[in-house]
Image 1 (spheres, rainbow, N blue to C red):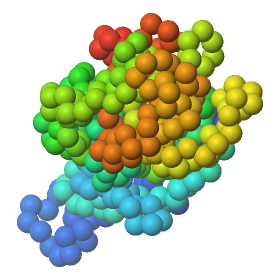
Image 2: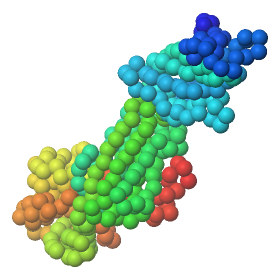
Image 3: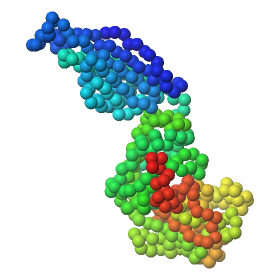
Length: 395
């Protein structure tokens, strides 16, 4: 067998592709078969073995195998941990390409079995290592795995590093639902300033829908960093429950399965300034219980600093529904809060027990400071379906 020759091929700096050219030694039909065979060639000559070229790519590209003077019978590409890169042979059997991309900072062994013109098979092995990535991108998924959420919760991915190659990333994100729900990815800026992709149905989820995400990102370049693993998650949609908040009427109404089951007097944000509430659809992000609320953290100076019970987060910017016994005089007749939706201790306790993360809060009112933005919590429902679909990188 001839020695392996390494020949650099210029691609992007630090991630150059390498071609490993392996010429298989010619062998006789008798040696290949382990014994004699009928139909010996004229003059006792053997057909030359196929010449195999293994192209080890830069990270983020598939592994390619080419053969001349014969065909490819089998290819096995294995990483150091025993994981395999499966692939497919092209028409004519002279090329093979891996289905998945090579991962940065990973060593691979390639075993190729080729078939010469006379049918004799030969096997060769080679190896290569892709360079370590300069930056690794990671992500945070919501909702949590194996959770049950309300009908308004999108599938949401927040990326640690910038994503400038959004189409490349989105192609690797596969959403499957138990009832063929129509939906779309949309790219937005999270309230933290990081890139975020949400998958939102055209309409609220149907109760009982099972949702799974296969994010085959291992070896994908986001533009701001490389992914070095795949991600899997799944969740179930619970009962249909929508919370309607009328700030003008100072009333919160719970609608379950299309029927009004409860009405609670509330007090919203004070009109005329920064203490106004947001309007539009906000999705319940978390039930945080008793927490300290400090107005300085939301840009309201020294307006308040207190422990607040039954806190239910609606936006990243600090709008909650919660118990507000200090505001009891205004429940049902005036908006006098610092932007949150306040109610009595008794109502807050029972409401907190019945509401679910992912339930949409549809908030209306004349005196508000604007509509909840897509990245300020889960505000995607404030865009039309056409507007949301336009945010996909693949449209």
